[in-house]
Image (cartoon, rainbow, N blue to C red; front, top):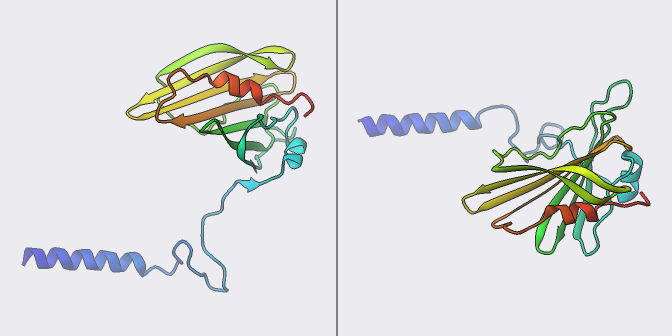
Length: 187
C-alpha cells in the first residue's frame, strides 16, 4: 500500500509540472512564438566592437573559431559603464574568453568566473599600450580542472579587461603571453 501511495504521489507531481499554462522551453507559445529566456548577449562584428569600446582587443595571430559578442550595459548619465564586449577564440588547443568594458576611472571585474581562487598574484603585463601595465593573475586548481584568469585596467583608455581559460591541466601555462597578444595598437 505504501508503494502504491508513493507511486501515485510521484505521478500526481509529474502531472502538475506539465499542467501549467506557460509553454515549456522551446514550445510554441500562443500566437506562434517560442517561449525561452532572453539571452542578453548579442553577436557583433569586429568592426562594431571598435565602436563599442576604446582600445579594443585584437585577435591573436593563429586564433581559430573567433566569435565576438556584446551585452549592453545599464549605463549612467555619463554613458558608463559601456557595453561588455566578449571575444571567444581557440589558440594552441585551449579555449579562451576575453572581456573588455569601458568603465571610466574605475576598474571592474567582469570575467564571469566565480571560483574560490587557489592562487592570487599581482604582476605586470608587458607589451600593452606603451610598456607594462599592472595585472592580477588568479588560478584555481581542482580535481581534474584548472582555471586561469588575468585581469588588468588601462587607466589611459578607462577600460577594464579580463582573459580566462579552463582546462584539465594548466601547469606551466602563462596566461600573460596570450593577454599581451590581445593588444591591438591600431584599434
